[in-house]
Amino acid sequence: MEAAEEAASSSLVDESGRIRLFDPSRFGRSRDVAQACALFRAKILHFRKITKQVLDQVSEEAQKVETVKKQAIDLRHSVALEVASRPQRLKDQREEIACKQEELDVSVSLNLLIYSFGY
Image 1 (cartoon, one colour):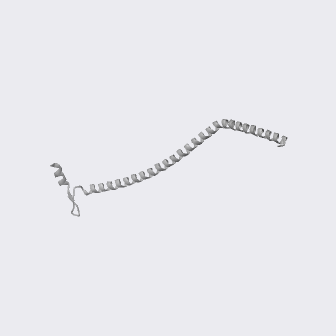
Image 2 (cartoon, one colour):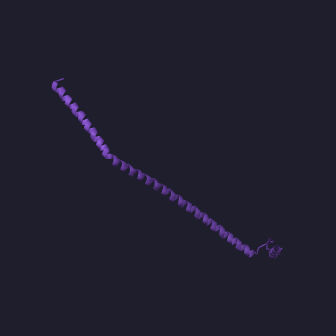
Image 3 (cartoon, one colour):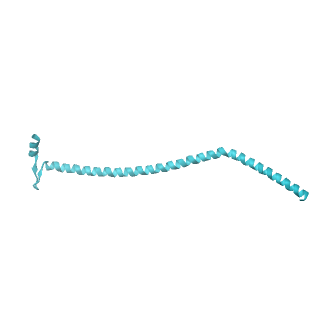
């Protein structure tokens, strides 16, 4: 009951003839606080937007770095494999050259024999 009496005793009629439960000075202060809150909220939303843009850019750059890093690792592995396989490939090529040289020598020898007998 006291709350109802207090509300009735604190109600006022303003110059427009409206019944006010709050003192107009308090209402003005509430409006100022509401405007300050709205401005603060707008600034926070703007900050969030800028922060998201920065994070997106950083994420994009990080992705690019990761891609280049993977390419560098792949290249390093390719070079390592090439270095490791080169001696064996050189050995195989030398054997192939020796085999071809042997075939050539046999072919030349046969041709010399054929030409020497006059066929």
